[in-house]
Image (cartoon, rainbow, N blue to C red; front, side, top):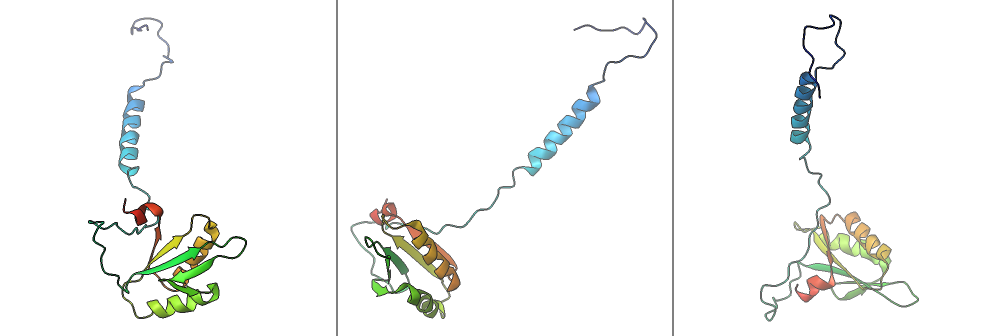
Amino acid sequence: MSMTTGGGGGGYSSEINVTPMIDILLVLLIIFMVIVPVTPKGLDALVPQPPKDPTKQPPPTDRTIVVQVLYRAGAAPTYKINETDYPKADLLPKLTEIYSNRAERVMFVKGDDDVNFSAIAEVIDIGKAANVDHIGLMTPKIMAGQ
């Protein structure tokens, strides 16, 4: 690194003065540090919480709606709404009837391990068509209370 003195040569200097460039860089860095922390918002997930005391089960309520998608080998899956069997074509009218006079529109979907996820996605779409506000997925860990 060498330094030039002002006494020799008498011509123009071709060295860049980096001080203003560093000032601009620091200002841009501060601007981007302020703008970037805006976190993107994803989909809301509603997960049923395990009971505090696993030995004492709460009494069943009719408010909780669980749609089960059950696997049948070599055939279309079967569907249940709170342990009552329904064909796929009757899911939308029944869910619309259930949620027509409810203020709390929460539904849980439980699928067998062997069911293709497209069947679960169809039930979620049917729930959205029935004006369900929040749809949660029930997993084996949630069912085990973990």
